[in-house]
Length: 425
Image (tube, rainbow, N blue to C red; front, side, top):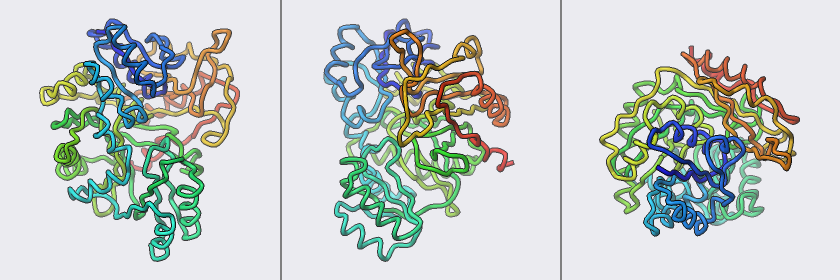
């Protein structure tokens, strides 16, 4: 098989790494890819939103199967564009990717089909939002309706913070048109857990749980980022939680989308809050999480191509997902100053230390080759250093050990990824 992966981050590097293990696959392309992906795939200088160029490339290169990694092209309708050309592609169509593309849509869907989530209201008028806040209970959460690189969520502890948040999202347009509509919802407390799943439109298969660290600084301080690290499995995702979610959330979401005439094929990411009243949905994503993919995929025993083809063919019920009885931890090495402002173009050294090691992974997120062929930093999140171990404690120790193998000028990371593991003991 000839496979094309669309995207350029750590998630796509993790997908390409899994695809490369499949005996079915002869050749991998990645558009646009990055310096790390280039070791496994032929990188093609086509942007993820250049649908016409991508479909033309897929036809010209006789691509057998395309995997869409990123949210923007999915929400923009890239799957529809590929299918219109008769090409096999993994991911939800535009009318299903709205599950992530519009938080207002997903909240309304959950309310209609009685899927547990936080109480909320949607607003298209800044003044109406401000009026609502006058009688609302603090703290409260403001969410931009559209895509905002995982950063369009504001947790406001006071009324003044909430007013400023409405101004930031709806009037100042910090996240552009994503803030034309906002969701204001109750603040939930509890442990957060991420659960990825494969879906074929009717059947859902759950992957191993994971837990993200969104804030930039230790102790969950600082601004929201795209994710500073992750671990899998989550010790807080118990059999009891799993049973509840299977009964009230997972299949219910797939059935709800089908009932709305929006059958979902691909990956649904469930962001859950384990509240005192039981698990509730914080958010949906319509693709692998980043860096969730970097800790879940290394633990999956299945040939990823078997699973993805089963999703596209509507035969996911013939697959049994299996995961190693181990653990994985990912620590993101970022550029100091992320997510606000940071410098790029610094040489990365020490990457060869990962060669030939089966239990260590260095996933490239923001890297490129410079004019001299050296690998340099090219983003806020630069590398995802992942390690597997017999348990979370061992995996965490190994991941932090491996963060010392590589270096670049403004390297920054959190030092408490997975610290909650020890608290759970």
